[in-house]
Amino acid sequence: QVQLVESGGGLVQPGGSLRLSCAASGSIFSIRAMGWYRQAPGKQRELVAAITRGGIINVADSVKGRFTISRDNAKNTVYLQMNSLKPEDAAVYYCYADITPTGWGSRDYWGQGTLVTVSS
Image (cartoon, rainbow, N blue to C red; front, side, top):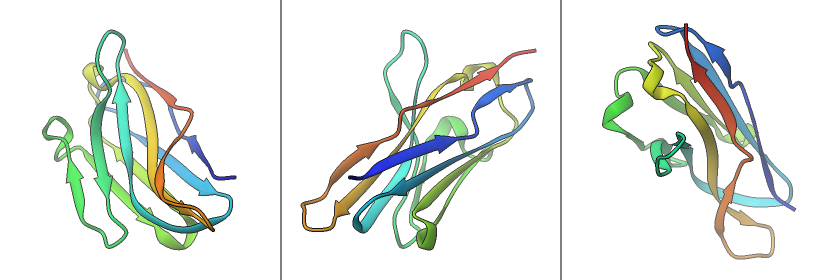
């Protein structure tokens, strides 16, 4: 059974930083893209950043220059370093990964979500 476990959310003041982590575990054959979405109250879920196994990155315009995505393939882990946080960055952040479990076809898996609150 494959699962994604997130950590690192919390309360931060505007201008502050947080680092989110998401580790995939279970019987994993391979992982292609990994990334982060977020959903604020009353809004649709939106892509924040994604990274392929080879390191190709896609970042939303709203966070470019402030957020950095990276991954450790050996640890099946993706990170999101968030700097210069703004109140509008507050949301539940969801990790996802395109995983091929051993003996099965690939599909997207999602983490449980981690809350990021940006407030003074």
